[in-house]
Length: 86
Image 1 (tube, rainbow, N blue to C red):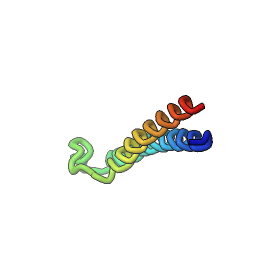
Image 2 (image 1 turned 135 degrees about the horizontal axis):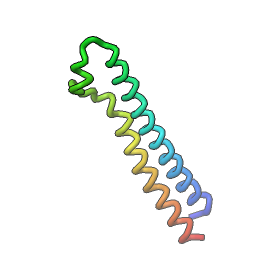
Image 3 (image 1 turned 135 degrees about the vertical axis):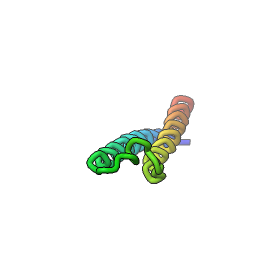
Image 4 (image 1 turned 90 degrees about the vertical axis):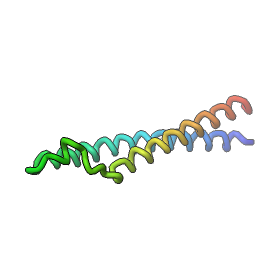
């Protein structure tokens, strides 16, 4: 395995870690904007009870967590391969 391959794996790991952090931050922002918009409505039951659950609101968080896990695995594998081979 060449040095470029190890660096590519490590680079992809770092990219996915950063992408996961962006997705998690985006999820927090989207939830804050959504629930702040509910404050302006007359019926606050949905805001107080958080019911019904909005499945689409969890998509950014779930994608971010998957990206963080994938990025962590790739970064560890790339780093270990780089250290072992070179």
